[in-house]
Image 1: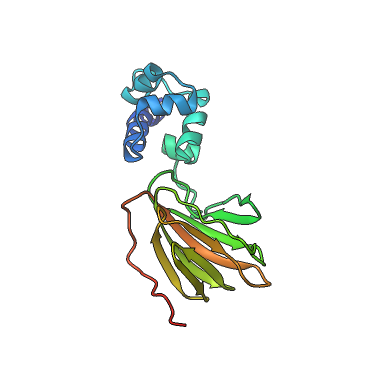
Image 2: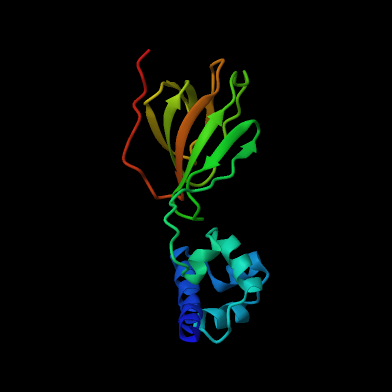
Length: 193
C-alpha cells in the first residue's frame, strides 16, 4: 500500500510539468496565477517537494482540470463535462471544453431582439460558429449577413465583428474560438440578395 502511494505521489511532479508545458505556461506565469512561489513550483515538478492539497488545489484551478487529473486518480467512467453557464451582457455561454489555451468550445444562447445600433469589436483570435436554432446576424467588417440553422461562419476576430440575434426568440449556436493562427476548415459564403 505504501509503495502504491509513493508511486502516485512520485508521478505528480512530471504530470504537473507536462501539463504546464502543454499549455505553454512558464513557472513565473503559474506562480502569478496561483500565488505559489516559482521555487516551490519547480521543486514540485522535479519531485523534490511532496505535493499537498494546499498546493494542488490552486494548480488544478489554474490549469482548469479536475484534481483527479493532477494525481492520476483512476477514471470514474463518467466522460461528461459539468459546465457552469456564464452570462455576459444577456448572452449565455456554456463552456464545452475545460482546458485553457488552444481551441475553446462554447454553446451560446443569444437573447432575442438585438440592439438597433450594434457595436463591432476586435480582439486576437479566430472564431467558428454554427447556428443550431434561430437566426444570427453577423456583422463582419463591411459584411452584414443573416445565418440560418445549419449555416457556418469562420473569421479572424481582428476584423471588426458582432454576432446578434435579430429574431423574437432566443438563438442557439456552437462557437469554437482559438488563438490567432489556429484555423478551422469551413468557410461561410455571403448570400446574394
